[in-house]
Amino acid sequence: MELNSCSITIINLFLLLNFSVLCLSQDFDFFYFVQQWPGSYCDTKQHCCYPKTGKTAAEFGIHGLWPNYNDGGYPSNCDPDSRFDKSEISDLIRTMEKEWPTLSCPSNDGIKFWTHEWIKHGTCSESELDQRQYFETAIALKRKANLLHALTNAGIKPNDEYYKLEEIRDAINEAIGYTPGIECNVDSLGNSQLYQVYLCVDTSGSDFIECPLLPRARCGSRIQFPKF
Ligand code: 5GP
Ligand code: 5GP
Image 1 (cartoon, rainbow, N blue to C red):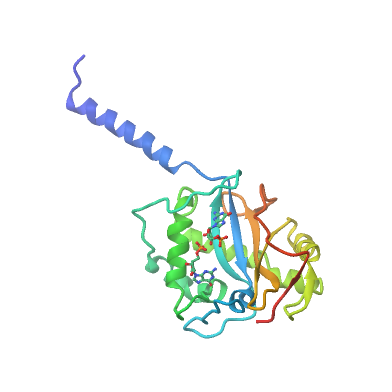
Image 2: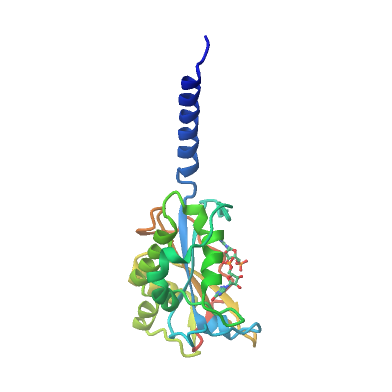
């Protein structure tokens, strides 16, 4: 049977359509939504730099929204053609400065941090969320999970005191309904402290879920909650 150019075009279109469906199908199992305590980022040997807009509030800040696999692996840098396009989120910048501030040095405006997070992690959930939706989703999740409120309600305050790891976990579980992953780091004196809180989110980015797998804690049984 001879194929004319029209049938070849149709076959090519069909193949292209199947290929795009394959590429766009959801290709991760859940998100880690990771928030950092600024006091614990800043009091380490590396120090920190406040953003160009000045010292941020004593509040948890977003670190990232990271697509993950159930076995603990994760995809990264999934779309070499994608660029961070500031114009797509220009109306969100003020909110991002507040909810997703950068503390790395030298002092900067956050664009580098957000670009890094989008390119490394966000491009791996493009089947679910485009760039604008990715940042909007993270902001919405941050507001839904008011970690500092959950902790202070349970008497756990950023006052340089030590708290039981279990107590911190329970307070967040009580407020949000799911067990968080807690990650510690050490301050310049070597004290173990509350650094990051991981919550798990379904692939659409809308609901918290029980974590299929909790990240490694690297915490002592009692950890410091530093001032900021
Ligand atoms: P670290 O080695 O400091 O724990 O992590 C360095 C970076 O690797 C993180 O900021 C994040 O970009 C990535 N990363 C570390 N652990 C995980 C993980 O469990 N899931 C995902 N998706 N990314 C991770
Ligand atoms: P990840 O660990 O997500 O792969 O990468 C974090 C990157 O973002 C690092 O290169 C780090 O220097 C930069 N970065 C900029 N601001 C911040 C911040 O406030 N917290 C953290 N954890 N990393 C930041």
